Amino acid sequence: MSPNNKKKLDLIRVKLDKLDNKLLSLIKYRTKLVEEVLKLKEFKKEIVDKKRINFILRKIKAKSLKQGIDPKITNRIWKNMIWSYIDYERRNFKKK
Image: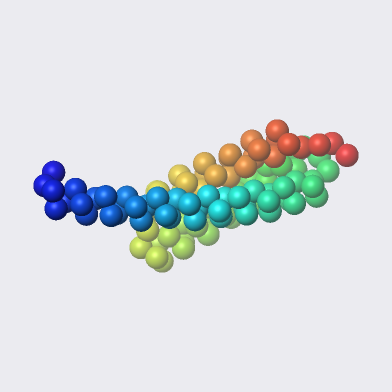
């Protein structure tokens, strides 16, 4: 890699690091919202809502296409996020 390209790469990586920090803040906020939702669930079987999951994934696909984002990327990100939060809810579910 040329020195000029290395410098450009370093600048882009700084921007990515800043963006990652913003994403972490959003994930923290999302986690707080999930915790609020979890408090409303009375039974562990309420944690997985397949209709809601499918609705979210369809909506994300449409928005991705509209914004010119590869829907395979966003689908994978959202599926991983959804199932990560399902796992989180299962681990933190407290029967009332």
